[in-house]
Amino acid sequence: MSIYDSVKALTGASGDGPIDWAAVARAAKASTEPGALDLTEREQRGYAEDVRDARAQVRAVGGVDFDLPEQIEVQHRHHWIDANVATFERVMRPIEDHSQGLFPGFARIANTGSMALALGFLGTNVLGQYDPLLLADSEDGGQDHALYFVHPNIGRVATDLEVAEDRFRRWIAFHEVTHAAEFGAAAWLSDHLETRMQRGIEALAEGELDREAFRELNVAMTAVEGYAELLMDEAFDEEYEDLREKLDERRQGRGPLTRLIGRVLGLGMKRRQYVRGKAFFTEVVEDRGIEGASAVWRSPEHLPTDEELDDPRKWLARVIG
Image (cartoon, rainbow, N blue to C red; front, side):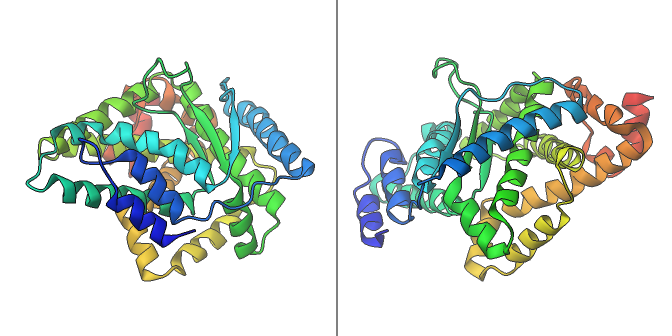
């Protein structure tokens, strides 16, 4: 890891656009230790078995068939950064196309630095990721989703939490596979999220804020995170509340700068989505069972509204009857 190399990559940012994405990747990796990826045969087998078991058990409890990505990658931090630079670039493209400044060289360095900071921070904290590859070109190898595990982060966090790494890794695998199940159950979900994401980003590029687009995006993601928690409760092999509590305690114990970066990147919102979505589906399941909860994926119209998330009985009356 070299801060000097990171700064050098930023000051060398070039190109015509407001962000030099090659420099983003170089700077983020220069400031981030990649971590070891020398998996033992037992660890390799463990990842494969966890994903396979998660798929079988999630299918059984959720009653839905779904596919997993053809290639499931166990990565170190630099691999994850490389994979996600393309995602950031896709999301930021509309804003880049509209960006003009009086000092383009300076702005390019500042923008490149901001993106490198975000990717470096996430690269050291992400444990697993189901990526539906939103906004990706269909010609991009034909792959429309991906599943990543960042092995050094899983090992480090398991040690920090004083939990068995095998159990912790399995928990992460189950959680990410539940997301694959949701997108498999709802063929319309990717388009639904993409449309709202594009509306919101294009409005920002024009200097406006499309509150409705971001509100609808937040509601949909709250349903996604809440339903994933529901499936986890039903599918995982054992009780896991201790893992969730320890992760929450670890987040609260972070320094002020780390917490600030997390808020800027929306990680606090993600946690609120878990809690709010889980509360919604818990009440739905108590009334109509998991089959009733799964009705949320029949069509975009079956998603709860913002108001219904806090009053599940209104959703039940409207959708289930």
